[in-house]
Image 1: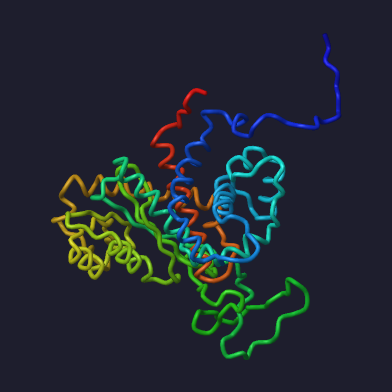
Image 2: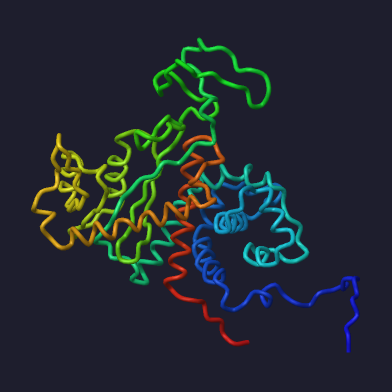
Length: 365
C-alpha cells in the first residue's frame, strides 16, 4: 500500500536526541572525554562569572560548541549558530534540547575574555594529556618540538609607518596601497589593527606576512601533543619556545628531544644538555658551517628513530590548518590568538585520545 505524502508536521515528539545518535558515532567518545574535562573546571568558571544577575549561557555549552566549530571546520560563529538551530547531532553534543532557542553568535565574542581569563584552553589540554597519561598512551621520555607560522587576521597593506609620516589610506573598505620602492620592516612599520603581529617569512622564496608563531611539544609513543605555546614571530622564537616547553615538563629521567635543522645551534644543544635532555636535532651541515650534533648523539639507533618520528608533528599542523584557526586567525592580539591556537591543538589531542581509547560501548537499556 502506498503511503500518503502528508506535509503537516506532528504536534509533539516523543523521541529523545540521545536515541537519534548512533551508538558507535565517533562524537560519543569525544563528548565523554570533553565532559570529563569540563566537569573539573566548574570552580574556574565560577571565578570569572558574577554570583548575581541574569543567568548567562553556560560556559560548558560554549566550549562544546567551539569544539564542534573546530572539528567540522565551520568558518564563523554565525554559521555555527545556524547549524545548532537545525542540526540534531550538534544539539545533542552541546547539550541543547530540541525546543531550546539558540543564542546569538555575538555571545562567543562577549564571553571569549571570560574563557581566556579562566585559562580554559590550556586546562582542557592538560586534562586530556592527564587522561592519556593515565591510559599509558604517553612515554614521557621521547619528544619532538616544532613551530609553524600562524597568519594574522590583519592585512599586510594595513601597516603604517611608526613615525606617522605616511599618507593616509584611500577611501573605501579596501583602499589601494602603493609600496613600490619603499622598504617595510618591523622596526619602521606596524599594523594598527594587530600591533603584536610581526612581518616574517620562513624561507627566502615566500612573501613576508603579518604572523605569529605556534610551537608544539609532541610525545613519541602515539604522536600526541602534550603542550603548545604561541610567541612573536622571529628567528629565535622556535628555540626559545622549545626550552620553555621543556621547562614546563620537568623530569628526573633522561629524555630526548627531536627537532629539525632550525634547532641545530651550539647554544640550543648546550641548553638542552644542561636540562638533562639529549638533543636529537637534524644536522644542519653546509659548506660554510658544521653541525652542533656530534657522534655522541648521531651514532645511536635512537637518533635515526627520533628523526623519523618527529615528522608526525606535521600531522597536527596539517589538521589545524585544514580550514581551522591555525591557517589564518580571525581574532586580533596575541592573547586571543594564543587562546584559539591552544584550544585547536587541545581538540586535536582530544580527538586522537578518543580514537586511541577505542569506541564508547553503551550499556544495554
